[in-house]
Amino acid sequence: MIHYTCDMCGKPLLVEEEVRYEVKIEVYAAYDPMEITEEELAEDHLEEMRELVEEMEDMTTEEVEEGVYKKLRFDLCPSCKAIYLRDPLFQRQERQGRRISFGEN
Image (cartoon, rainbow, N blue to C red; front, side, top):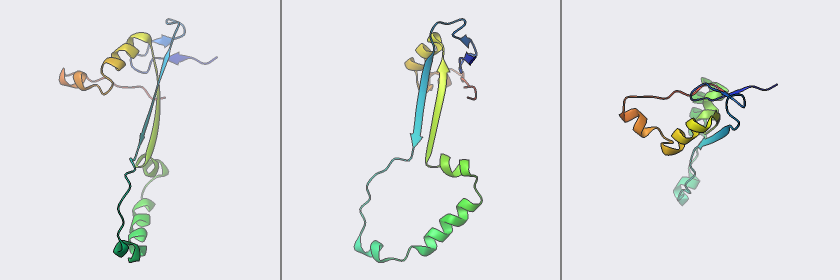
């Protein structure tokens, strides 16, 4: 049997609460179309590409992926869902000196 707990408060879900909520967050590099000039197209970018590959050789697969895309999923109880929806970026919590930490899923 799968057991769920609230990733904010740790309360068991579907035992103490009839309902659980999922929060899914995707963080990815935004794509903005670039204006490319004829000169840039004519340039040889081989050295630039080689440097990028060298930088990535010292990185783990996870580090490379997180630089471009990260998907997160959290389970919340009804009261933590209400808190999250009132302040999804926790801006007010930080100003009040409190920080909420999410559990690992």
